[in-house]
Amino acid sequence: MRALNPVLISGREVLPLVEGGKGISVSNGESSGAWAAADGVGTFSGVNADSHDVEGRPIPQLYHGRTRRERHEELIAYAIKGGITQARISHERSDGRGRIHMNVLWEMAGSERVLHGVLEGAKGLIHGVTCGAGMPYKIAEICARYGVHYYPIVSSARAFRALWKRAYHKFSEWLGGVVYEDPWLAGGHNGLSNSEDPEHPEAPYPRVRDLRATMTEYGLLHTPIFMAGGVWYLREWEDWLDNPEIGPIAFQFGTRPLLTQESPISDAWKQKLVRLQEGDVYLNRFSPTGFYSSAVRNPFLEELKGRNDRQVAYSVEAIGEHDTPFPTGARGRIVYLTHSDKAHAEGWVAQGFSEALRTPDSTLIFVTPAAAEQIRIDQIECMGCLSACLFSNWAQNEAGTTGKKADPRSFCIQKTLQAISHSEDVDQQLMFAGHNAYRFATDPFYRNGFVPTVRELVERIRTGD
Image 1 (cartoon, one colour):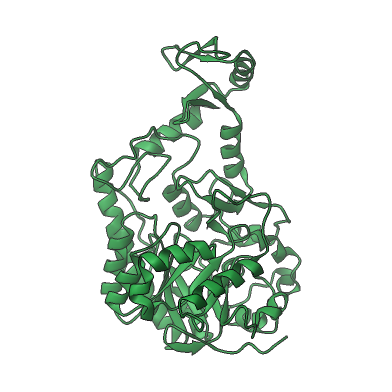
Image 2 (cartoon, rainbow, N blue to C red; image 1 turned 120 degrees about the horizontal axis):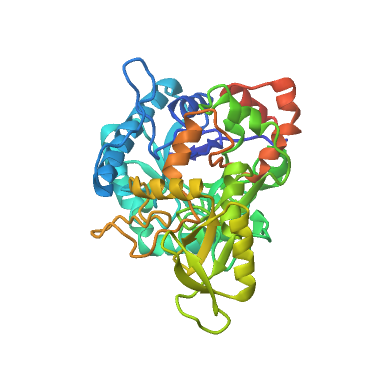
């Protein structure tokens, strides 16, 4: 294994090993502080992070507002307080070593307000901010204001070019690096464009080489790229080291840090990881963000798949082949299906999926009465966790709505991510993971149920394994 040389990241030379920032409370101050203490870059999630009571226990994020907008304000307050809390914990655990980054999603609720609030309240504790899930044009200006480096997450050279031309060229001195997140292999939300086929992944090397060429064009030859998604054994990436086509490179690990002693996820989640097989993680488009996402196949995901499979197009008037009446709802309102789709619908009703719910795309999905009631409750209790939500039709605008019908094919992402990160339930909740998660089962490092500390994991990674 070729020597792993330090790279200048956020103003300090550190190991080019980066903890990926994962969702709600999944990478926190404990895990990121430990990663930094091992001379790498620790990243805590700034997405509705936990704050703690006087005994150090996470404070449940409960909502009391009567309206979505009132609950939205409560959520922003939780997010800022939690982000500051995790920054302080991470700083303490790092022992002054490595670098501490915060990860945020541009499409999360009040992302700009949360960034200002956390960076103001945790001055000097955060060295960099990574940001993806959208086109974060304003991240540069915000970070520059607080003297913090920024790291946009992109999946193509084209995306970075757009960000640079519109905003980043004005704040180039604070651009600490660019995170290339493989849209086919990374966990969580993925940046697949409409021109890319989710079923036909492209090799990362040419895409990162193109990103480096674009960055060099803008005078960013020495600005590091973080390779994220699909990284497991460094020996498999050895030809990327000291490679002039790639330039300064660091490797971001999102999935492997889940199985460490400092990782805050439940024991049930950790045990689930070591039992995964190839193919158990797959790309889906059920997320209320509208992005593709990569998650573990479990009953929660299968129920969403079932909703989408039990779907037929309808018309409110008899038009063309949609000439067969079908009653829906408690009042038996008539819509029109094709003859074959009516047969499918009647079959689903006979199986117990008797509730027909309308979608914004003039289709009906068929679910059980219990599922229909839960969907209705979750939509009503929306706390505005995204800038725009397909599931509840919330939007962060004056009207407070996307202007479209709520989409029952999706789900409340805030609810499920809070549940999986604060409980043992790994079957009925969304479990994000990178596509390489199945390698836990075959990696000899984890034999006999071994769970390493973060430091032990970093040392193992440095060997190439």
